Image 1 (tube, rainbow, N blue to C red):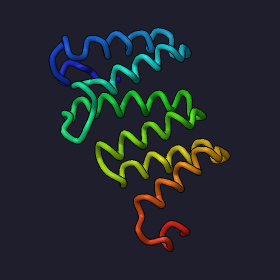
Image 2 (image 1 turned 30 degrees about the vertical axis):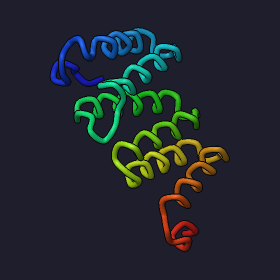
Image 3 (image 1 turned 135 degrees about the horizontal axis):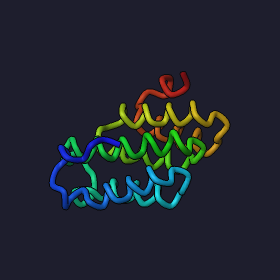
Image 4 (image 1 turned 180 degrees about the vertical axis):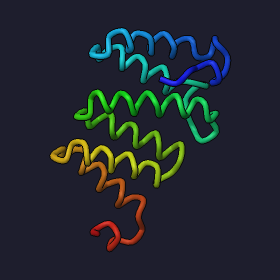
Length: 130
């Protein structure tokens, strides 16, 4: 994970550092990963469009590494896409959905979520069908 020294105060990122160290010491422990993800999601009181670039980079780095390790967890792809939609908009969320669908091509749930997302964010039905 990134060096947290340039991401803000030591106090603010102490929990993230702690959970990251746990993940690095035992990368197969799912509970450690969940704790890291939760800690990153709650940085700065909860991530949003106004969050610092450092908090967003920390969040994205944690999710990207988590989904490389556990690519078949479709619920986390959806959660990541939802967060990206709220933070950066539909283009960013679509990129997450596309990565997720490429990682688990046979996940009906993820494809359904992706299609629903496209229907809600694309106003031209012909574009959705392509």
